[in-house]
Length: 265
Ligand SMILES: Cc1cc2nc3c(=O)[nH]c(=O)nc-3n(C[C@H](O)[C@H](O)[C@H](O)COP(=O)(O)O)c2cc1C
Image (cartoon, rainbow, N blue to C red):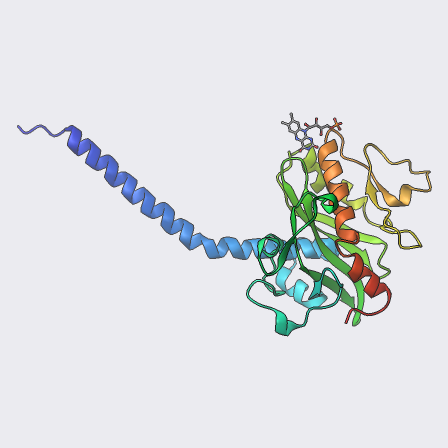
């Protein structure tokens, strides 16, 4: 009787199994790609809504977004709105990706090292800005922010009231900090602390800071201070720096100044 088992047959079967498995895995990867990018987009919209205090479990995210949020792209240096005719495949409100914009030759630029407190090396020359409207009037501005923590770059949003100094919301939608330590940036209790804090003083000086430890609630500075995350001083410092970078002169400063003056045309 012919011998059924042989090294050749074993190898052939193993190769066959590998081949079938690789076809299955790559088909699944390609097939799931559009679903993944749609979910990523929905998650971004969900976080914009959350920063604007418009998210509740079970809502139709796209519908709520369309109903309440408008977006525009602003020139970071001047604070002026970029007209739609200047939009292109990379720079547009529907598909805005801060990372791609920052790395783009056309839309990104290096940040001089002494200004780079957020540790991001490059930034977009144009940023998308979201506004929440109530009865046709702007009630909040939602601004994308990002910067280095300890292990990762944190991407999120800060919402400012129409008065342009009261913080109305704060959230990160992407980071790789350690759960329980730097990852506590996602703790709803910590995020709620931001609401009602003042980003600027009456003279327009940038005041908001995330401090190491617990803010003294009785102090005159308390309205500008957020408690640090315990056991996560480096993430805390990163969040402080990225918020101060984006609200400062090299971030949304020119835009905020223009809006305070009543126009950004
Ligand atoms: C496994 C591991 C993960 C850590 N993750 C973080 C983190 O996500 N963010 C952070 O600031 N510190 C993290 N740390 C702690 C830092 O190394 C550093 O000790 C800490 O930021 C100092 O904070 P403290 O002065 O509040 O103790 C981690 C430490 C270890 C061992």
